[in-house]
Image (cartoon, rainbow, N blue to C red):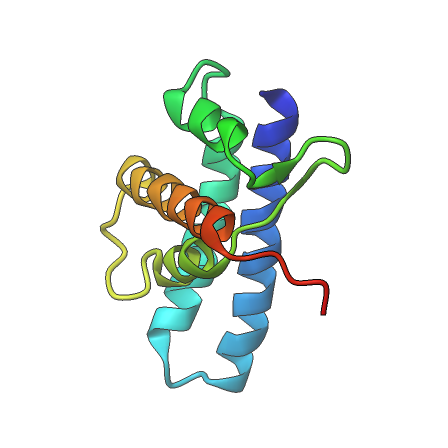
Length: 120
């Protein structure tokens, strides 16, 4: 799970950097800055998770992490959850967020499994 934790932390850090750039473009929107700060703190928090954390095991069981490339990629619902973390309030806890984030990523994976294959 160490690789998954690292990939997940990198995902949150990279998302935080992108949100910091957005915050510079939209300084009137405090939610974007709050989201960036929250995601950066979340990245550090994820590194400290126990390897046996069931949420890590749930993510590993679904198509959210490319172990070979050591890359975590959230899709539509997972990406939306990440963009909302602490956007409205700085009070959201990492535990509460990660629960919702994992469920969103699983929802994305299950939705992808139902999409028909297209070679277009």
